[in-house]
Image (cartoon, rainbow, N blue to C red; front, side, top):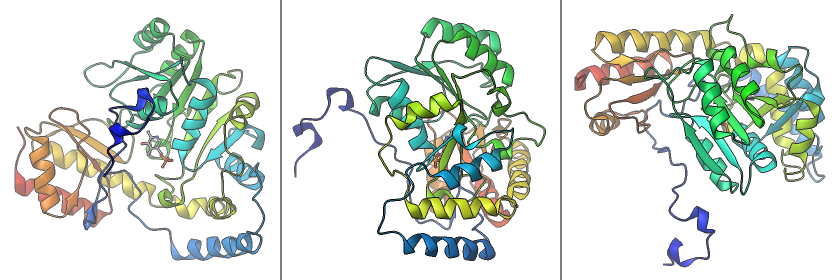
Length: 360
Ligand SMILES: *Cc1c(COP(=O)(O)O)cnc(C)c1O
């Protein structure tokens, strides 16, 4: 068999490893922050009816500008946004890739505060740009002053701010976004993949868009919206920034089936999001129980909890795996990350962990 080393691969891709969260068929999968609740039956039927209509015209290319979907996303986001301020892709990862292709790329840099979303360096490198990692305080917070100073020193072409942050769950204040924006000359992306799990009165960076054409706020239907398998992510920004993304996207990148399914799901957003409060309840239960077991959970505004105080994360991960529970070793020493599941899944995780008894 040919090995990768024998192929004329780009020099800057040599030695890299692909994204590889294990996809194991375990009964309790709490490793990639999905919504553990399936789409309600009535919504499935509504989506199927629209997908059937789309199939009827599937011999033709889809609407390249996905106009109906953009209108539905603008409606869902509110904040007075219009369709020409919305972009979408096959997951917010693709939306981030479009941003990197347009504003980073060879000879340029993208910057984020580590530890943060593991796809940022991979998307950066995949588009030929260089990833620059900044630092956080011990509790993973970032102050506006320190953030501005780090960004001014690095002078990146793109800054990625994950709010709340994955894999730590840490909230990010809008004062940090404003400070970073003012300290940077490049594009500022606020990744709000988990915004729906934040407290109801938490302000979104969407409120900062007016007058800031270098700011983009990305969201996804993969987490709160229970639509990970459909692959739909999106962002809001100035119409000029959206125009830049049109230069790099492949024509017809959103299939007619994706557009139909996502638009129908958004029409049912209230039902799609009805499990969010229940998930937040399970998240808070995880944090409280972990603390009682002697672990050190970090504050989370997302649908997962990062916890410290694990003496041997690899061992604990394997012990849980052997008990049918899949969680995530994100590579932070002494830590593991778990997604809030259904009440039953969450109980299964907490009981399995208690039975291992490994808090240091
Ligand atoms: C899960 C996640 C995404 C979403 O990815 P999709 O491609 O939309 O499924 C984006 N950003 C962060 C920080 C995430 O954790």
